[in-house]
Length: 433
Image 1 (cartoon, rainbow, N blue to C red):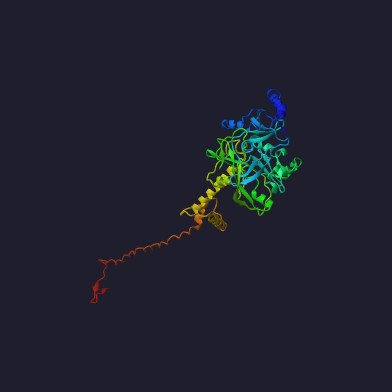
Image 2: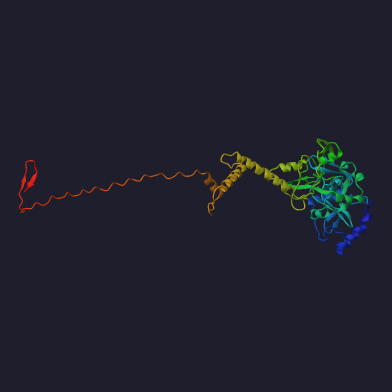
């Protein structure tokens, strides 16, 4: 058992590290020994100290600030090991601890292993059904405490973070009894895939938190029968908001607190087909039929909440992906409205059909030179009927040239002295002799 006296040497090393050679302390991540404030706000710090001082000790860590270490625990102790899982309609997977301090340390803050101090708890003021990551394979499922967000990606593949069981044994009342031996954990890390993390997102003045974890329909298929969900009434600290049905308030020192768990009417059916596990990617979350109610409500809210500030949303990008789905739905609604609006644009398929006709007509016409016109103008010109021929205007017949009368031949001149004698007969004929 870990005793308080057994920590004295480690605390001495911690003091030396902070005053002298700091390189000897097993600091996490990149080894940069820079002071950091704990995640908890001042209004939570007093409750944390008062509620946990009977079960461990508080020390100052050079990176994580004021941290808590449990005492009187086994040498192979690890967080999220002594207790069991239940599945809730509201938040998904919920960790029910066997330890009296579990109602705080598994639902607030983060755990991280230190080389010299062992597991340390970094306070945090955001509540969750469990701050864990999940792995799945064909023959094993596993979970690991989520460290602070600054180093979360650095610990995903470390075997000392993970605990594995067979899928059908995840509801065992004491998981520490059925868990795979530590010597086999390294192999299961290689054989499984990181599939999920706890989801946290801001929503106005409150927040949404859920733990989708392993798909419960996959567990039901492994068990071979439907599984029943439960309703949990957790105990939370003052200042905690957004936890449905919770009992709020600090408790007296040394008083054990445990959640109230009741069976729920919802039954989750076994999956008819189990796809292979898919590697978790920030920004993508699969909201199936068995998703926690908190995530379904968030997804159904137009313009749903965005992710919280850095350090509070471990599954970053889940919410933008869901918002993208919401925006896509809104665009589809707008397109449907436009289809039913008089004068609105027609279906896209009709436009493409008309463009295909236009291309066919273009292929059957001789080139028109280098003249460039907008496509819609060309399409209108093609469908316009050919212009009628110009009217035939009859030309007037020119008038005939005027008939000029030829002057009459003048009579021969009558000579006065010609020596002839002319005589006019009775018939009017004139005879000259």
